[in-house]
Image (cartoon, rainbow over all chains, first blue to last red):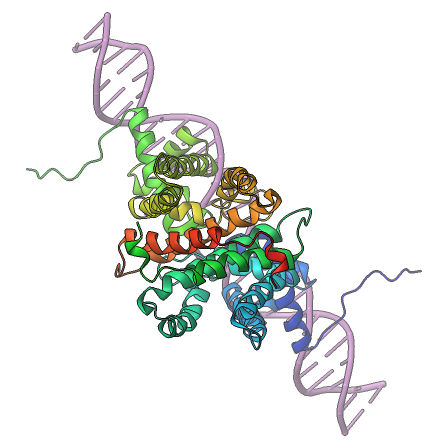
Length: 208
Length: 208
DNA sequence: ACCGTAAGTTACTTATGAGTAAGTTACCTA
DNA sequence: TAGGTAACTTACTCATAAGTAACTTACGGT
């Protein structure tokens, strides 16, 4: 005999760790934090449960690492995308970079938009993506001051834009038949966002 | 003797049912679907577990009713808000109605924005709020056709606007110190959304 | 070819939670 | 005031999942 049945080889510490992070991302993306068991991750990696504990201490440890990596990955992409171009071009490039992340790493994006465990949420915010709002806020505060708007209201616009691109990303990313190319979606989202900002009244509260 | 210790009275079927829906909403809002136990809801209602099963069949049954009620409540508010006024005013009224819901029924809003159980999600969308996108989509398709834009891209804008107001709502709703009144937030969100739509190029894809 | 160690497994313990069967108590009504 | 019934409780069963202790196996260096 015998046919070689697909046999999971031993791996080095580093290899196994990398694989578990990858597999964990996929499983967390599918079922969410609460509904995934360490068992399931181990099974998907063709390994037994204690291996996961050895590498990450537990479910939360693995989850925390995955979220951290994905947040950075997303942030890096967006930051890199706005390196050059006109303000208008950079805005659209940022949106496109966001959607490219959704497209390239759907599991990562899914993890970022799903409920996070209680120990990882600062008062009320269920998912982790809203932290981007805080990061974007800083950029906006600068721009607002420079453009003669009240910097106090910058957080409103920061969250509005993040929310916009996030929900569009979720919707588009889960379209069964991809009706639009990401460039098309990005151009429309960028259009409404950019035009909204450009034509903003100096004091929207007085317009009513 | 004796001091009357606060004693939970018996209730009629209808009373108990209403109370459980109310209590359930609060508990689901705090911990999310997966992390709340029927036990905890029962305890919070000062009742034993089988009562919950008698009324709703189980955790999902109760959850489904709560989500349905809240979706309708939110939709009704927004629909009522756009009964009259100029297009611009109705737009802002809709945003304000949304934020009023966030303010008045924070637990309901929280339930709508948290992870829903697998049995209640159509392919990928973790929360339920994105269904609003589909509902808004229909309105937008009409408006787009009437205004000379391509109705095919209406869903992009529908989801963009829902995402905008949703994340702003989450952020604002969880601000520990309420820095802005809802009318102020609504005016800014309405401003960026409205201006974005009004000054939309006929074909954003060619602008780049 | 041996053997130390890194990689991995089996087999638990403990805890928690969904769901149910069977019995108990308060209330209203004739 | 008896007793029927709606409201409610106790006390389980069964399943699943977090985390761990103790053991086993493959492999690379001498």
